Image 1: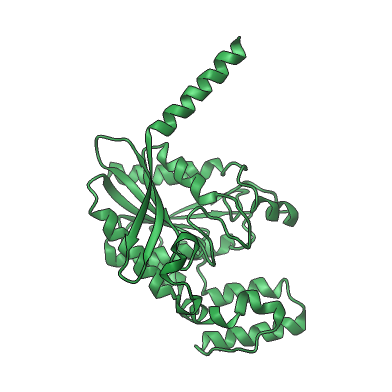
Image 2: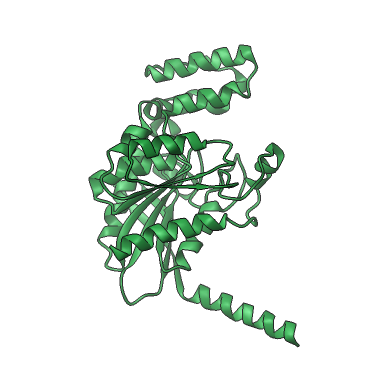
Amino acid sequence: MMLRVLALSLTLFTGFVQASVLQRPISLDTGSGELFGSLLLPKSDTPVPVVLIISGSGPTDRDGNNPDGGRNDSLKRLAWVLAKHNIASVRYDKRGVAASLPATPDERNLSVEGYVADAQAWTRKLKTDPRFGQLILLGHSEGALIASLAAPDVDADAVISMSGSARPIDQVLRQQLSNRLPVPLMVRASELLDSLKAGRIDDNVPPQLQVIFRPSVQPYLISLFRQDPAAAFAKLKMPALIIQGSNDIQVGVGDAKLLKVAKPDAELALIEGMNHVMRIIPNDVKRQLASYKDPNLPLAAELGSRIIGFIDGLRAS
């Protein structure tokens, strides 16, 4: 009987949490294509903070999932953590990705500047909505760069950089590839990186490197490689939070510390054991890769507490 009562209580509690949060699709007409996303809005009689969640590189969708890397629902789960603490969020499919694919179906036409303009357009839309108070841009991985570049011109109230690089991305790629490629292939990869850094397309891409350097994605890489994430972060005048996991196999703690140097008044949260998809996972390659495809793994508890604490501080001020 006691177990039945407990199960009923849990069911009622879960139903209450769901009922107290409004879930709605949301879209944005950019003038050059429509973008689609998801809104989570806690029921409240007063305006609540809203977080615009910007996903990472490649075809990563609004939920943090990538058709090449697997489903982990990291950004979707983060949105629900925020909602349960009276913080609204909008997460969206970038142009050229998932439901927003028709906005820019040819990846040759994608650019960092376009992604920044889209983030700014979302921000302006949310700032005119009376249901929202402070507006925070949260970018994950490459999305952290987009958030840093977008925030100054739209007067965002704060920026959260999560697993964001401080170094130009060509440097990050060069380091990652040098640890994985045989020497002859790495020589060619370095030549490709040098060409793209100089703004030149190079169509001579070996089959083994097509996934990264295929000609159709090279215009985007050129736009990406000319950005300096640390310099962009240093220009932010609003409060900022840097979040980095110690067991992230894609972006290291060193990058988080460099972002802190670039903006000394930013808050730095180093989460022990957290990986790139926000789970507590040992530094074991097999288990790390498995976590990218397991949506049932819980998010790192400290992740939610640090973000919520930071936003509560904004509310208090």
